[in-house]
Image (cartoon, rainbow, N blue to C red; front, side, top):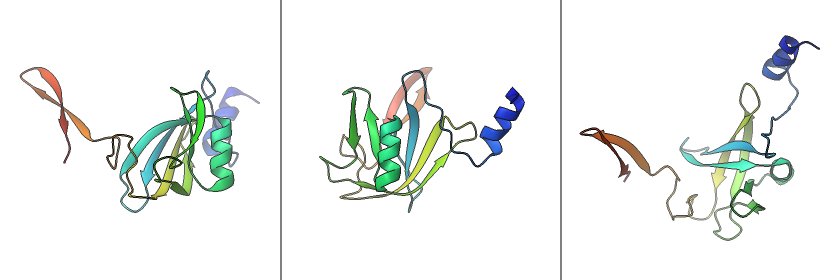
Length: 131
């Protein structure tokens, strides 16, 4: 098959062929289905992806701990997967989830890991906390 045919098959075909990086990981954006708010960005390896698809609960690969983790095992904020999407070239995933527990996804105790905005004032960049 030619490169053009391969590209078309990946971009337009029905075959799920996730592209893992050199470390065996794929980026995963997690969004709360009800509000469409981005909760977090994490990584999955093949095992995490398989466990997520098998159980319907989000599993990720911790790069810092080098371990599989099921979201919510310690926090109670289990993420029930409502849908899993893949981007056009199949190197990124998007989970729509129903967040359990108190709905907070961030290890800092916030709902979303994206709680700061970058602003520029007088040529200086700084982070501003979202309410």
